[in-house]
Length: 398
Image 1 (cartoon, one colour):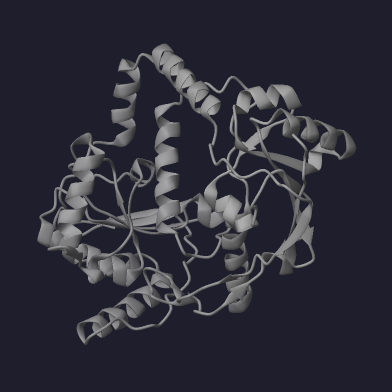
Image 2: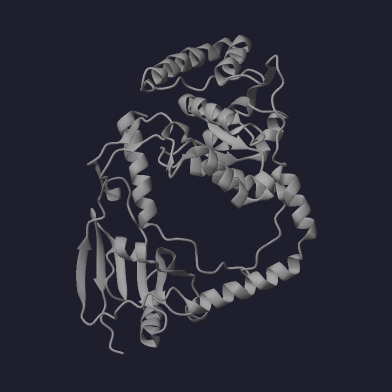
């Protein structure tokens, strides 16, 4: 895919996310949480970490989402100054930094330690700003028992080099095992040289090489032990001690209270019928850059209209769930239109009660959605009309 197409697809995805409807207010099941396995929980945390590391990047293919990439495994067992050196190298290399678990099994302690390393006074050190995630699964996959460890993953095969050494030396060790990695070593050397001379080069990194077989190599000196416990083991212990029936009961009660409360936006009721056209175009006020390579992905001033790329077949109906006349109007609307292509969104009211009345899933409105759709009163019917959103306000006599 050419660069312009990649940027267009990425921008459309961002805009569509602003126009999309969030999670349903209540699932079609009981709404109670099911007991996850430690492995599932670890996978979720790893996935969310990777998603956070990818903010501002183009959509990735299924293979890349699976785990393909370049990683530097670290631990807070390393001294702060040593960690800073590795973080700088990770940023120059474009590697994602991963921990095996939480420092002292605490999110707060982990956050404090990260801030202590990244910040000088009240401001972060830009040379250290690289994404840091938690992924015990990849530690298990590559059998990492010491840090630092440099890991290449491609198509479920991996190459890992670990030991008390610089990232450049670990990369050189891997290059000796697979010649296809030599361009990475040469590119990183040029980039590091540019950094020492006042700033990293803008040269794009090589593509991830095909890995013929999984390989593990070690530097002459052993690396540091990993201070953080494997998060999967920690989760197993905590789940074994948890009173799951009580958690389900309390979670269910909390959900019911929240659903009964409703979104509470209290939009005004439409006093007269009218139609408004809303332009969904988004203009980027500043450049969107790759956080690791500083490559400009979307230039400032770029304007994107999602309807240039997609056709919207659903109709959104915004209404006040506390108004019996508006709920009655929605019931009649559903009889006249195919419910499969209608999404119901309430600005206020008891979600569960409204769903029971309408026999259809109901979603919550939120301020961002209402603003993006240009909804100023309820009920309103929102649909696509060419390159615009067509917002029809319907006057109902209470």
